[in-house]
Structures are given as structure tokens and as C-alpha cells.
Image (cartoon, rainbow, N blue to C red; front, side):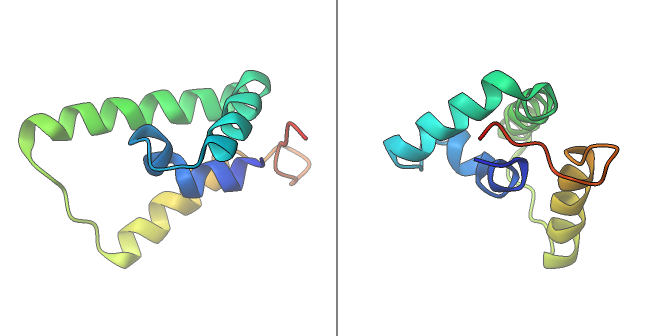
Length: 85
């Protein structure tokens, strides 16, 4: 699994809406990628906070911006995404 793959499936992963194979690939990736570990923890915190205040509806533009920011954070200084493959 690559950083981009994890970013696209992060909420599904946290909600248990992934196959056992996807979950295993995510766990393997997270074991070797500290950036994605941080993104996962931050996303978990956001979900926890919003659970107390109701759902937040993102526009498609805001969702794309958020995913872009996550992917940009996962990009290394060489411009390549980190992978644990």
C-alpha cells in the first residue's frame, strides 16, 4: 500500500469498512511510515471530535483540498510518495 492509497481509504479503515487484505496492507504500511501514522492519528482525533458535534459535510472542493494536503504531506523531499512495498 502506498501513502496515497492509505489517504484515500483512511476513513474506511478507521470505520472498519475495508477488506481483511486491505487492513493488513494498511497495518504493514503504517509500521514503516511515520507520516501516515501521524495522518491516521489526526484523522482519528477529528472523527472523535466531530462525533460529539455532529457530522461535518465537506464540499467536493474541500474534500479534494483535504486529500491533496494529506498526499502532499506524504510526499518525500524527492517528490516521490513513500511506500512500504
